[in-house]
Length: 400
Image (cartoon, rainbow, N blue to C red; front, side, top):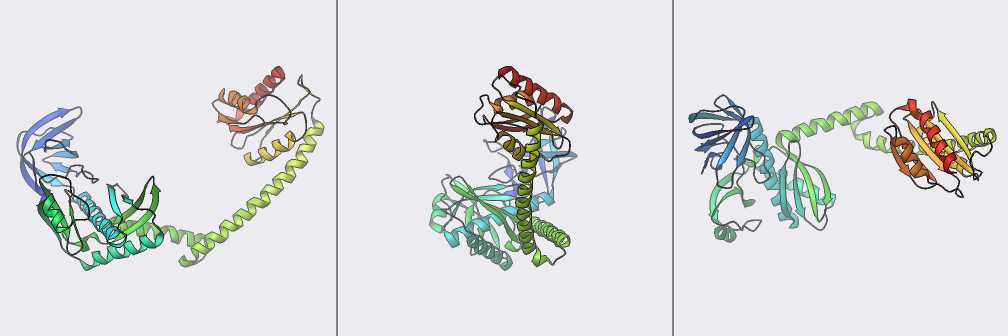
């Protein structure tokens, strides 16, 4: 069984060991050491990276038999080896993992919400909570409590205990594992079994920021960042806010009000545009109906076909609906703006516009569908719009 040096010293950056085996695994190599400071993927925390001699360690695996496998980019000779951890990655992981312990403990302390899972991601970390509901006030209180613990800079200690000993001393989650467990204890705040790498003091977490909370089936998922990630997130938020303030020519604190104002103005403009489209569609529909050829189908239906060059895609729907409001009309419309296609027919007519559209646009790599009397879609090649409408018109004439 590999001796895990990180259990007692998570700040160990370099170490010496012996290579026991080195086996080829495709283009990589699996290296077994007698001792290691490399952390393998486990408990929601990703593996460490770094170097063994001149080989790059690209992944670290924890086998069920207790051995740790180092996946390297080249072979390493059996015998002495020197390992070096990618410290920036390790320290970031320790900030996020220790921050997670504080966050989970705060949810227990304040609201009795138990953490059921943890994931340390590349940019964002998450915990899933067993909770009936979570409101913004809960998140604010928990975030404030966690950062209070961080600023107090309490000691974080590593110890070992059995499940019975842990139960007697109190932990925030029941321990079912047999034998001796490694325990991470935050002075005066939290005590929990954990095999991951952690900081020496809470102040090293720097700060914790809750970024998002959303329902995940029966649980609640909370996204958070700590330390360097929190600083990067704060810088990114400030840059985004500053850019928005520049666009609106206002102060940072005025951005939310300006966004709301802009959104309302946009909604008002969209309503006005919709009314204009409807008025234009009514006028253009009358002109198209007047210029339409006599009934071209066996059942007396008129086919009105048109490919617009500069009409917006959203204009086709009101125009097609207005044309189909007249009896005995099938409208086959398209526009070169986005390659949009819309088919519609009067309610008394047979046939299926949805099926017709799917059949014709799919022939040229397009997609779409709809109902019996109305369908819409798009094609990637606008040069084939005339071909599509002609094909559709032929199908309609043939089938009536």
